[in-house]
Amino acid sequence: MHFFKTTEKKRTLMLSVLAMLSFATFAQDQLASVAPIDKRMRAIDSISIAKMLEKEAVDYSGMALYPDWNNTYTTSYGVEMPKEYKIDLRDFHFPCESRRVTSSYGYRRSFRRNHYGTDIKVYVGDTIRSAFSGKIRIVANQGRRKGYGKYVVIRHHNGLETVYGHLSKQLVVEDQEVKAGEPIGLGGNTGRSTGSHLHFETRFLGKFIDPEKMFDFTAQDVLADYYLFSSVGRSRLLTSEESKSLPGNEVLASVGGPTFEADKAEQSKRFQEERRQSLRASVHKVAKGESLSTIARKRGTTVAKLCKLNNIKTTTVLRVGQILKCS
Image (cartoon, rainbow, N blue to C red; front, side, top):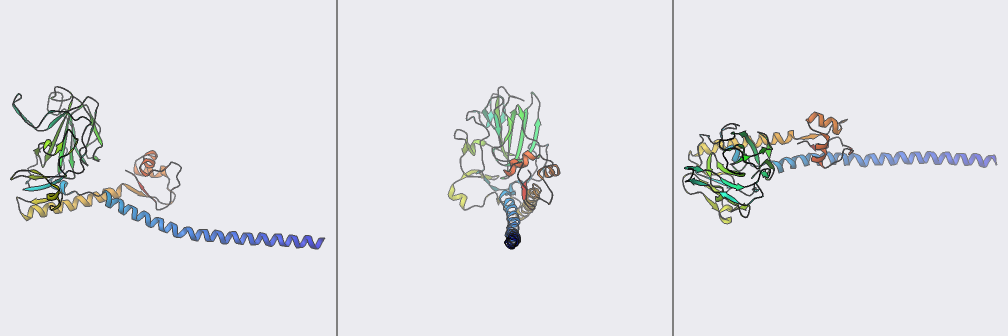
């Protein structure tokens, strides 16, 4: 009996040793299988950030046409006008829900002055949205009896600037980037206004353009994908066939010759590089020991915002090398 008991103990011990060896081998196999995955994930993260930069980088040639960036002057630029410029309208989003035009662009005989925009009937508190993607240049108030009242000026990537006047409240700040359709203010009756409405202007290098030449206010859509601005002839919409034969958002003919085009090409290149740097600054690569709270503190944001931007939860375990959007 003692012999059998000893043999049983030995067999149990051997089985335990074998089990431990098997587990160790299994664990090593698991680690070996995870290591390449981690490397692949880091590679995927690098590819993801590169694609993100490529996807979000936009054509800044329209922005580069302007001589400077300021938060003061509404129309004065003193810049050389190109003979022709193709403006891409495809990013358009109608600025409000209302389709009712109460006053069009042109000379107002009753007031003996020009009206440089289109008035759309809105009510106090109605949401006003950016017509195109771009950057907020001016957020100001001209006072109760003067001009625009509370207004916003946005410079867009396609070269246009839009003005939104008589707002009751502005929802954006200067130098903020916005997407087409993003809320920028609330409808109102501020400034020189006889009733609540949105005064909507479109300009190119400070030159006023009748909005109804580009947009169908009833359909809340563009009249064509492109608008050919001309400083020497007649500006016009481009048909689909015509637009195919011309590059988008580029100077097609210049007043000043090659120097003008070369200067603008250099400015466009500079804006593109600034945009890429800005995008790189808007993401964070997770380092060892970092958590959502530590990243939020470093980036001057909140955990809730990080979770929303990256579609994750507060309990999500972060991987070293993982790329997170921060803004």
